[in-house]
Length: 428
Image (tube, rainbow, N blue to C red; front, side, top):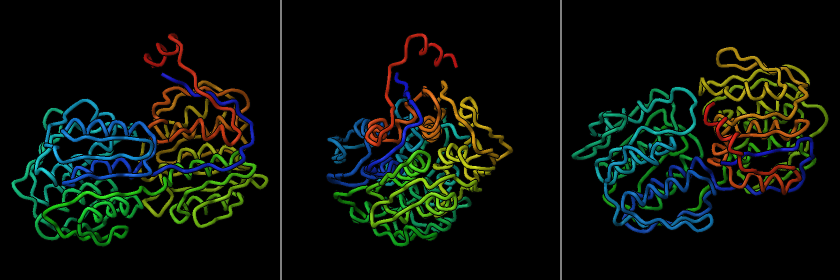
């Protein structure tokens, strides 16, 4: 097991290339199950979640060849093998196997998903959608059992805007009989990406990216080739790193429109941004101003950027408030930032941040993926060396983050944990 070490206080300068979107990849790989012939997915991020999903496709009888950022999936021999335990428990996005396998085989057994512990994230809207399409859904011994003689299109209203439920229902509905209408659908770019893949496979989907999606079921889906959109959360994370320590950083291979909510907040803080067709150049311009941030569903401020933004706001000249309306347990990074000298108080769903903190390097722990990004942001700013453990969380969502930051001038590296440190981590 590794730890990441950062010797802070060094300016960042240069260009960083953004990888394919993690939140697309974890839905697109299960979507490949739906095809009857070869599916090729390009521009995949090199993250651990991709490897886990590749292995799961092979567990159900397919073959998947991963070379660099390209995955070639052969789904012809896949079958509805139960997946109640094992790798399926390692990432939350394994729930997309429910919609894909239900749509393809009319049955599935999937263990309740794992991933980052961000508090209650129920899948009741997913189940509501599956049942509306005609599936019988039961929960037995920690696994979801889905069974349908036939899937029939229906009108489904989501009580809560949910990316996962929107995609999962879309996966199940593309081969259902008749038309399915998803109302109050999520609008995230990743949903459009999944709809684009399915449409290339022969699905008939209209309205992806709006709050009403219409799907006319088809009998068969064929293989295709698809390139994943750039990762707006990775891009936003590097924009925040650049706002903290940038002497001039270009974040390349991005879709600027997907980052508008973050860009507007950084401008509000006094950060200089120059925007091109597929790049954003960030440079720090004097003191950072305090701001208030509230996370909202897309196109609002992304909850996945709340934690690194909180770390950045410890450097503003004044008090800021960050409110997370999406996940009520997404403040576990606060205790770790306090170890480094941050002055932050949590009240309910909000964090009150007193800026101008002189952060000091410390031994800290990444409690989840984006908390890890927040600790890297803090480590880049801090005096002295910061040691981050449980970095497997970070590896779930960021391709070559150590190498990318090193290329920008950061002093950051990996080391293996000692036996004593391993024991300490295991006992914590």
